[in-house]
Length: 380
Image 1 (tube, helix red, strand yellow):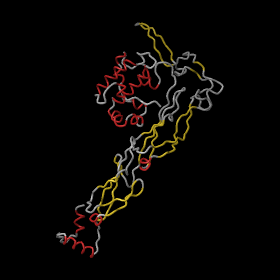
Image 2 (cartoon, helix red, strand yellow):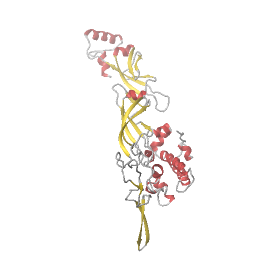
Image 3 (tube, one colour):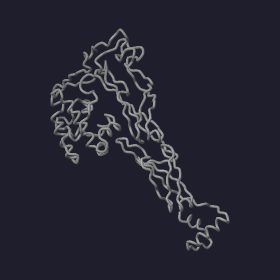
Image 4 (cartoon, helix red, strand yellow):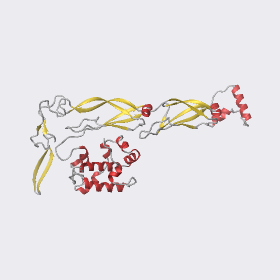
């Protein structure tokens, strides 16, 4: 797969460029390379490249994602249609005449995804969004999972033609294969010609006399396909993985869409997640807090020893380096944060109370009717 060029480099702008600077740069390049104006062989590919760059950098959320994670941040979260959704190309292309971007009613979407002016040709299949629920351990360490995905696939019997084996589609006699019909109407103001989709072949340009018995002429069938997906370490709720070519089948020989797997990380019974850190609460006794101790705490990788220094206070937080979640986009790793909760006993024996009063007396405290544990409890 070819490495994508930097979006800022494509538009020829600085990474600190304003929204107006980006818009101006795009309009200039789009006017130069739009396929309706530029007939050079590479014009359409260049136009697609600069249009994708503008669609990302003109959207604040997409631009922020791109600045932080590069192309991976865009490819994992957005389908090709998502990238262009919400961009007002109508306004940008008014200079081309008629207030549109050419290529029929679909404008720039026709250039990227097919459709538009003439008979219907190959069309790219739709993308599929699959929501996958995983636990925190799977999000931290990654996992290979097998998904059963319902989707349309090319019919094996007719190989997508829609015609019965041994036969083939015939040219439509109404539109002569163009997929469109022209009508001329004389009016007091002159002659007007209108073009519309052929109602006989519905724009296909061909007629199937003997439909395939498996797909009934559609060329596609519904199936449930098992697909293995590798979850990389570090994903979080909302992360999307793109599996190229595993979406819906294309039409009339068009390419297959993509499968997007969106993650939903279930709540954990011990840990909560804060970006790449994990947070937990550990309870210790008053004696452990005062004298210090070594305790065993759970981690995502098993159990670990942690030192409690003498004089630890309720609410203190200790950090276990590298015991958190790996970063999805680099080699870094988060930490485990352990918040201390000092537990004061609710029932004391007479001997325990006597010793605590003695401790208070040595410390110069006047306890009166309250034990030192009562006083500690009052401040927690």
